[in-house]
Image (cartoon, rainbow, N blue to C red):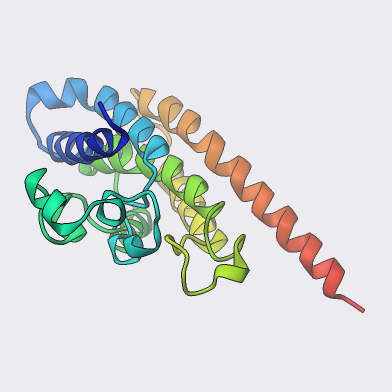
Length: 206
């Protein structure tokens, strides 16, 4: 299987996993943690910032960059990358949803799909693309394939902390352990972001 074919398959897999993971059925309830873990690994491995399709044109590894319109048609791809994974909301929408739920004091039972599916995905997605974002590639301003910033990393971390506090005292909270594992990398990148900003501030200070 060629790399382009693999990328297309990953797109379809992610879309299917996300759609399945957000369905409320007894069977999915049992499998949701495994689905979330699988989606998180795919998010970390994807060579494209799939939650930011508007910037896809700047990604040299995207199948929409490497393939001609005719080749994409033969492969059965839609004409626009935005149509390739329509069931997964874009990054800003997901971050706002998580922020609003955290602020509302919602419990796990009101948002299992957010905790088990969306959060693990974002905990892998944001650190990966922050490294390739405008803060780390200032010379490519206006032509980077992602807009992820340290502010978004901080926002996600803050939302997760509030969600955990909102759910303290719950008898069965195995999801907190899974969330902590997913959060570990995000927190590491957050620290790296802080160190980088501090160093730049010190260098610019008189």
